Structures are given as C-alpha cells and as structure tokens.
Image (spheres, rainbow over the protein chains, first blue to last red):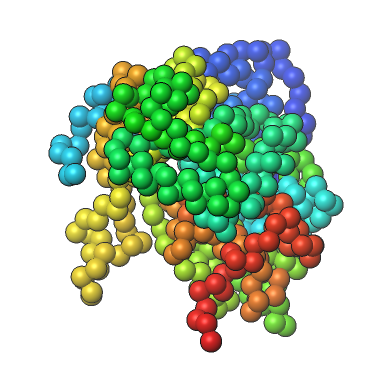
Amino acid sequence: MFDIQEKLKEIGPYIEEADDDLLVCRCEEVTKGEIRRALHQGIFTIEEMRRYLRSGMGLCQGQTCGKLVKGIIAKELHVSPVDVYPASSRAPMRPTEMRILAEDGGVCHE
Amino acid sequence: MNNTADVIIIGGGVNGCAAAYYLAKRGVRDVIVLEAAKSIGHGGSSRNGGGVRQSGRDVRELPYAMYGIQYMWPTLSEELGVDVEYTQKGNLRMGKTEEHIKKLQTLASNARAVGLDVKMIDKKEVKEICPYLSDEVIGASWCPTDGHANPLTTTLGYYKRALELGVRFFTEASVKELKKVKGKIRKVILADGTVFEGETVILAAGYESRAIARTVGIDIPMMRLIDEALVTEMQPPMTDVMFGCATADFYGHQTVHGSFVFGSDSGWEPTDEMIDPSNNCVDPSKLITNAFTLSASCRAIQDYIPALTDAKIVRSWCGWLDESFDGVPFLGPVDEVPGLILACGFTGHGFGTAPSVGLMLSQMVVGEPTVVDISALSYNRFLPVR
C-alpha cells in the first residue's frame, strides 16, 4: 500500500533547478523541469508520466530516455532507481508500417 | 495513519477519480480512493480509444451521455487545469455494402427516436467530411455532436485535481473484502489485511467489482472481455472526426498530437488451455487475445482509410472490458447493503460518460437526486419479476 498524500508531503514543493529546461525525451520534447513538476503534482510512476506528459511515447518508445526518466523519478521521490517500476514494452519492437503488419497472422478466416 | 473517511472509493480509474473530484468540489473532502495497481488509471480508463459519443448507445445510457456532452466536456480542460483534448467534430460510422447501410439506418432511426441528431449521409458527403476514405465506403451515419478526448490526461486530470482538494489516494491497495456493521456498509479490507472504514463505499473497480461485491452477497452479472488498441506515428493533420464502421471492425480518431489511435477486437479467441475440462466449455475468465488481432485490425483500418497504409505503428496494447450481461453499466445504490454504491460494468464505453457518472455518484453520496434519472441502471434489473 502506497500513500500518495504522505509521499507528497515528504518530497515537499517543487523547487526550480538550473537545468530544468534540459530536453529529456527527444521524440516528444519533454524537459526535465516538466517531469519534476509533474512528480510534485502526484504523477509518481513511469506509466503515469508517459500518459501525462508523453515522455517515452514517441517513435523510440522510451528506448532513449527511459533510464533518464527513471533516474529523475527516483531522485525526486527519494528512492533507488531499482524501486521505480519500469514501463511495459509492447509490440511492435520497431515502428512498422500498417501494410506490413496487415500481412501477418496468416489467413483471414472470413 | 487515519484509515477512516466519509467516503471510500474502490478503483482509481476515470470514474473513481471523477467521483472523488466532484465530491471534493462540493465540499465532501474526507474521501479515500483505493487503487489496486501501482498506477492511477491502470485499467480500461487509459486503454480505450477516447470516444465521447452518444450515437450507438443504449437508450438507458443516453440521457447522461448527452448531459455530459452538453454541460461538462466543453469546459473540462479549464476545470481540471489539464488539456483533455476534447474535440466535438462528429462521429462517422461507415458502411461498404447495402447490408451495412441498412444496419446503420436502423441505428440512426433508433437514436433519432430518443432525440439524438443522427442522420444518414451518402458517399459524396462522406468524402466532404473526410477525403482520405476509401471509395468502397458508400455511406455512413453521422452524429455531429459526438467527438473524442484524451483518456490518459482526463483520468490523471481528475486525479490531480482531487489530490489538490485533499482527497487521499492509495495505490497498490487491492481490496479483498467488504464488511457490514449493524446492517450497513462499513469496512473495506485489503488483501494485506489493512482495514479502511467509511460511511459510504463506491465500488468502481471494473470487472474486479464482481468478486468484491460478492463478499457482501451481491452478484453483479458481468464478465471480462479483451479489447486491443494501436497507435501510429505522428501524421499531418488529416481529420478530427471519430471513426467507426457498421461491422465494428475498428474505431478510432486522429489525436491532437497527430498520431491515430484505433481500437478493435477480433472476437473471442479461445485456445485449448481455456477449455474447462469439467464441462468442455470455454472458461470466459481465461479468454485472451493473440497476435492475429493486431494484423486483423490493420487490414480493417487500411481498407477504410487507405491513406494510412504506410503509417508506422509504434505501439499496441490491450485491456479488459467489464462486460455487463445487457451491455449497460450498474449504477446506483444497493438496497441490501445500505451505503454501498455501484459504478461498474461499463462494457467498454465508460470513458465518454465519466464526467456525468462522477457527478451523479457525488450526488448519490449526499442524497441528492441525480441530474438525470438512472433508475433503469440499477443492479437489480435482473431480479425475476414476481
């Protein structure tokens, strides 16, 4: 069981940092400051962060920024990065054209 | 830790978060939300296609679907301080054969009978609304007041606002059991043994609501069904309508971001492992999807929207629907368990109605009449008539 209001109290208010304008997710252009601000609004998990800011939701699906986002979340929540639950990986592994995927799966049963 | 509150909401999905927000907004701030997963909105709330529609709905749902679209969705972004990307540019339900058109005509005339503006349009009008569609589309039904929104930011927007107003949220808080005290709902017991106590309990935990309600003797007739979704890479702005088709092969829209989100299912896909050997029937709780669904969806989509044939798909995912036996949710108080309110069984179309459902749940808690009559959605509609 995880008490979100307690954690918010523990981590205190958002305080601006000098490198907050650093681009963390290149595909969706999400900055370190945006991620830190979201954390102080109660967006604590990578899954929620992806949905809230689109970090890791672009073409590379977080293959570039995944570790960076995890590090920022861990630092801000005062936990070890190993305790930050990773994002789910989903098919397809690389962006794939609709016409290619449409050929998969063998026969159409209609 | 104080484990007692006026209201305990089981389920941190869009309906649970919306109910928490509307309660807090009206001054009921001693509210606890319990979410089983690590993340808020982990279930269907974040896995759906984002439809905010009235067309195609059961007449019992229509009044509050229309209420939300008329009075709540247009100002929701402003109210929550988060862009929910609400876009009211119509729903196009396409047909390719005379049989499809006949089906769409029936749906449209049913909708008109209850006061919804849905009309049939021909091939030329379809092309005017969206020039990227296949020439095989010979007509469509058109509901101009339907639309779409972003389910991810809507769910988290309600959550964030409720947090700001003081609602307490617990994640990884899986509810195992409810208990009555002196004939009234009182205790909510977690799998880890923690006990929460409340005057009122709202059960909005999707399919899991069934097992939870059973612990106080109520069986909610619903089952689980899987639905798949996919998202393309960013495309140039092409259309802002919500798509559907007569055969329900897929639905979807282009998001504000530029990517297209489509949802679909290719029906139940039973395999040998799902057959219950005791009766040789498929065990519905074991139904899963398989890799063919994504391909089948792509075939359906590119046949209707050939312009997307070369669009790259970046991600696919799936989610469980809490499918009610008659396709509409269970909304309202439980007579046998005073203080317990149900909000489950949304059958895959609960996102678009979440604002009005959240508002009505807050009204039920304080004992006010709901903005529209929802007595037809009571859980006891399945009771035998004597």
